[in-house]
Image 1 (cartoon, rainbow, N blue to C red):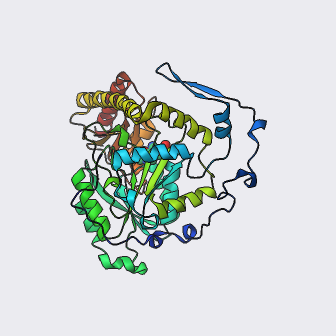
Image 2: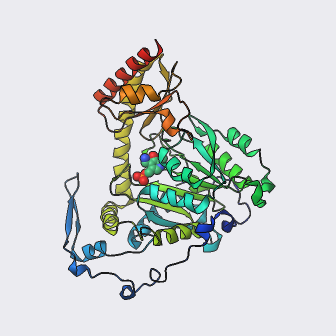
Length: 429
Ligand code: PMP
């Protein structure tokens, strides 16, 4: 749909080796996984398995059927990057949605490559393990998704929080942080200039914030100046409320410096665990080597089930489904905003989220919401999480609360925010 904006021109060729941890650089292809003929691969005989076929009923009254031959494939080991037909379907989707400039590059120059992961969380944690050494400086949206913090913090790096507002990362703040280094420090490892920038560009978890096109262009240019890999964690891409959707970092990636994590969790199923990484081949290949030593591949049955659905729908049907999911979240968001106006005016402030499933509330007169939420609000609803859970240092106080509008009915949302209002009044009296 979109392509690299005219304002961005290609920097010099990427040196991908610069970004790898020693562990990642040491990974080698499994000689057995590389073999195509499965006689040598230790594959069991699926005729001995108890499962025969499957039929999954869909909400629209139709079904997807996994017949005996396909079932054998679904029960067998498969290729590490994903069931080939699914990878190919997803590649077409990425072309259609993002049209990355790297599509036409040669493999060693950062050609777009993909792999299916067990949810985007698996992909992201492997991306961090590939790129982050102990002692590295890592740039990260603040506040941010607690699952990301759980994946990066144990790597022993120094997380540098990049301030955000309702439009995501503030480019000026990013520039200020990076002004501690000179662009030429990039070639001096001891200077430890940051090598990666992690961001949630749409419907941020927890803030609900989305980066604008202008900001993305500015941030991409900063990444070029300081030779940063951008880790674009975008599980709420398909939950953007307003059209046209902002172009992704992937769509403007003239250099091959973006690794994008997509997820089916918010649109098809979170339990099936399907995500996919898209990025320059030299880096995606390293992730695949890591998978060869861990999961081998995402569940083939899950992949086949998703593939059958996507092939039945086609891209058009898939996007139609997404439209219905967006409609649901949009009306949930509107219900939450109406209840927030009704109960929280004067007690809290917020911005209307442009994507995703969260409203980020700044509570007036409450220094730290942790006690209030954990001790008093936990009673019935899973609606609220204290803001400190999304701080790099979760012991730091936060006057924010994350309210989710995904699971509750508008009535429950209304009751939840009424109860929050009374808790705030109790707390500040
Ligand atoms: N990134 C963000 C920002 C998320 O909010 C989530 C899910 N809550 C994930 C990644 C992981 O999603 P999954 O592994 O289910 O694709």
